[in-house]
Image (cartoon, rainbow, N blue to C red):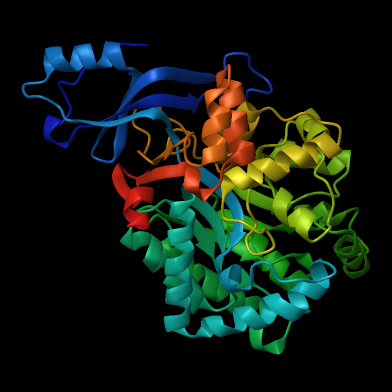
Length: 450
């Protein structure tokens, strides 16, 4: 580890955290030396940014030599500090309808999703749900998320306001839908884009907030709306674009009937210039090799949603195909089609999906996908996702002793891989001892339980 100088740091703002420290600098599936692990480590933070992460003995010796006074260290020994989880696809308006039964995606949307989203024209309701939703994210260790609102601009203001109040790094946007949806949720091609542009100007890069142009999915946007959405995305290359693609066989067939001129579902978006860096496509279960190649060429990313894909019976994600094409990948809960806010439970399902599709997914890869993989997919490496010097200090404290079963299994692990695997397969929100955003404690399991 390079020697760090503390001479240019405001030492009054310096914070120190001692525990096992883990973060990634590459994808473990493709690099042998992909992570840094300090069994007795120290994370140093100042002014909401990472100063250094490394071996406790080395860094503490330097601190004692250079600091004028004594630095108080938050002692989390026996636990693991790592970057906060990054959830790249979920819906905050669906919080209250999570775990709703339906025979498939399309009837689930019609019976539960659209009626629930209707309520978000009420600012008080939107604020209440947004606050609860963010509480759940932080309780589960998620510090950044790419979130869908509803068609109503009020829902966007409510979410960004709740996020801004806690200084979180969040991405969201107004949903665009001008056809094939209930009239009470329908906008127009021009009106939806106009609202999006106004919200973009209001919120994008305001503090830590980032905007995403958000067509719900191709079937609920006319050609005119998709065209305008693509043009807006091209006019603002630093803004995000998020939507759904190839989630369900019935959905894919519907898209084919609506867009017969397009080669594939993904080709619909490609036609309108929506394959680009900072674009995030949820699901992508039913892609072919050509689709994956186009995504890789354009640095368009996939948000893998194993929990909702299993819940709605949509299919198994093809890890081998995506890796062969080198498509940027990340993990997502997809609440409320997904049945948990926990990225640990999402890893649990991802592992099983991969096994059913004849792929083995090591714990190291799963934790990478939930941290640096998400940051890379969002073009935010160096800002979030690891402990590079200068990165925003969003991090979590994982507790391998959180439950009796997890503690018993953790005591018998013989490697870091085994320990992480136990956390992924047996852990949930209880394994998150603390969550920090920009260096500030925003959730403590101990405080929450009192």
